[in-house]
Image 1 (cartoon, rainbow, N blue to C red):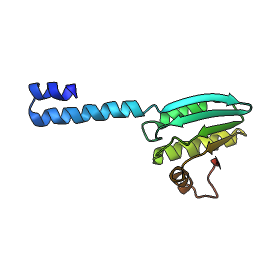
Image 2: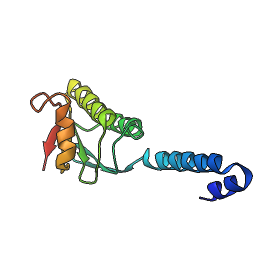
Image 3: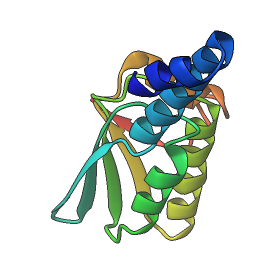
Image 4: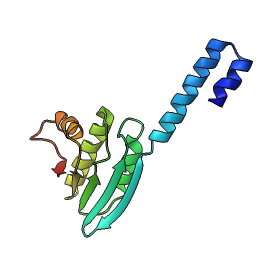
Length: 134
């Protein structure tokens, strides 16, 4: 907001508005590219509670977190995931296949119906490598 005000005084109005919009977009993507993640171990399960959307800006951050886990079963507590885009879907499928190759599994627990639907669309319900629990 202050950037737009200062830019308005120093630049043409149209340029200042563009600068404000770009700055807002930058700060929004910076804030949402690292979703809130809580991590704990429950027996043989490594659990991640993810709060926020899984989209192109957050996929890499979440993938790095998933790759650092060592449990036999990796569980994502997904009730706070509101939205997932194609890159998030692809990343979760890739991680589920990687874990399956290591004799481990990826499970989404309490995921919203629209998130489950998006995840099953990529390879179909029967071939989806991700397990779901209510």
